[in-house]
Image 1: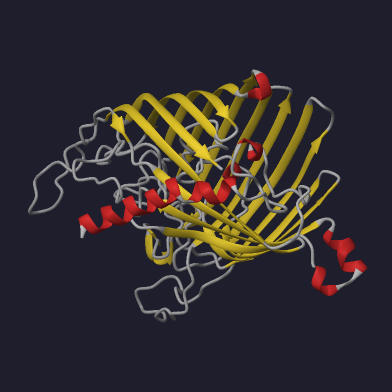
Image 2 (image 1 turned 180 degrees about the horizontal axis):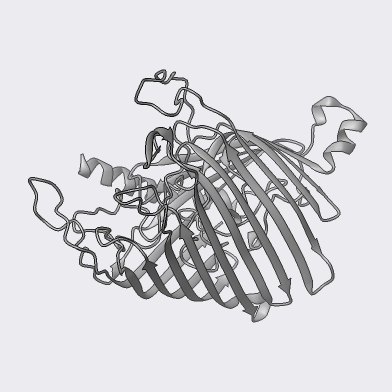
Length: 462
């Protein structure tokens, strides 16, 4: 089985390496899309511009590739805890790490122009940390024009509207536009994403309004990463939450984004994400590509694919979630700042109050702050240096003496990065990372935890 999976992975990479470039080089851009190369940098919602491209039928096939070299060390002060009653090995002993290359990851990007202002997008993970086989990230149809109505009034309305329907990346906050998504890492000036990484693909519809710098977004989704038509069991005497209730998720964003003059651009957005009840919500756990930090702070039985969230925090908000994110972005000449303030509340689907098991568990609170400062220089700003500080304070699900609810845990990271766009399709990054864990109990593998070191990443996008 392992051999067949390796052959499938190798076949997918060979197809991407030798076949996809021939398609991409021979085809033009499509309308109203974010380019997968350097042109897509600092682009958020898809632009309301046809980019000078006709609406004739065409298919554009491209790809993203990313490869990292990791030289990280980790340590902790956790107490001895056996794996099980029959396995006395220490579950809190960290796995020994050496310097080496991470798994090469790849995406295949297909964009089809189906008519004037009508585009279909499908992204497939050809090689990802959490999946050995090719795996479709999602797909959607996007309408920036509605020519089939033959209406001047509709055309006028669509001058400022974008409608998206399908299984797509949830447009909550702005940080997801600057994160690494498996092989797609050209937009991210750093190597890893935020500690609390808000990212998921959900089924639904979205409407975007853009005019004179004003931005409005409204969306309704399934609230889950995949479709589900199976009815859940009714309440039992041991249940405190009605798990048969599956509520939609509501996403909203309000913002301002404008190039004020040749040197200064200002953007400020506020976003919300809310679902009352889900079978398995994954807004903070939907990244099937996983973390760039391989096996960091993991025990001796960890594997690359099973333990794919190393270095991040998954709060376990599988049932109820209410999150708010505020993102300021300022770019003055080559200097840019991007900030994140996020407050999330929620709980798991079977989370009970540790003080009264007959009641629902309290909504736990997580707060995240992040500040990115980047200076781009050189011809066409092909070089940059950057720094990020990211901190999270979180109430975790109660364990033992109400741990995590009465006393939040803290995780902090700073990353120093430098990058070079060899051309618009190739980016090389070098980064130093330092991350620390505070107030985790002695029985947690993260007690006294910290890691640091250097990473190098090479990225290709077209």
